[in-house]
Image (tube, rainbow, N blue to C red; front, side, top):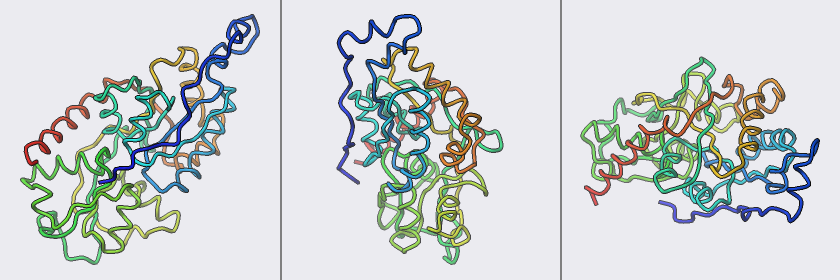
Length: 308
């Protein structure tokens, strides 16, 4: 498990003296711009840092133009760094995995979910899968006793929480059943570990045959989809949310929502980049939509306590 949980974030930004009142004048810029001349946007590390930068730089550039303030991309060292950054107020807007968002709520982060992906087929969820190499003899999880399992991050939904729940339903204690359980840090790293033989089975996210982390890696020349085979697929998981700090001014939160929901029409090229062309856009959501994930986190936490 990784222990470095830090993010190079900006300190909370204070209002500039005397400027807010001036900006409340008719025709002036919104008053919130004086308090928030820079917004920090963070994403959980589902892929390597270069991939995150290439994917999200057009997004933050678009948001900066639409909001009229600088938006800075911060690439988290691990999932916990995003949780801790929002709790401290150093991150204003973030893209979470469902379990990481639920964990943030469970630990008191003052955040609100406001949008999640609409898949290309109109669905609002995805799956956790276990991959093995296509040329391996393994046909099911039961065939992998004594082999090495690759998970993603303790706060990853499809890379840890859902796999552990699924294994429990199979009557499997991962630390006893597998030879080793390895946290790889990102979904890409989990595939690479499987590719290189460091692990024999790896958890990952998967939408459908057309879109998954593995398909994204294939499009970038990092892996071949047909080199791997799925031996387990979970029930559907609610899609990952975007969330902002609850304390942001309502006018700013409304501006963020408008900019994001209109992005497919206003900047289709940036939208294509951030979604790989595999999304219809974003749909509104709220914290209550993730209550089942909170309960799943609590269940898996209970399993860990029983086995420690």
